Image (cartoon, rainbow, N blue to C red; front, side, top):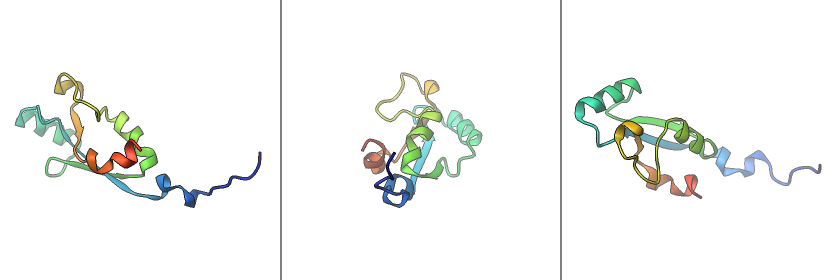
Length: 93
């Protein structure tokens, strides 16, 4: 019931912008990729989303992206996070 010792400004997860770069699963054919690109209104085969690190994991889950491994078939997953290595500190801390 005491006052918080940290404020919102002390939380980099809420005060930092990161960019998620999402593409169709590379196992799809070019025509299948084109359909997904159209469905997600991708530009140059990629969807770029700016978000806060505190919300990124929820967004990844909502879009059914896999980060640790690929699903058995591309139809099970459809999208991949292509800049995962750039975001490891934020996503897997």
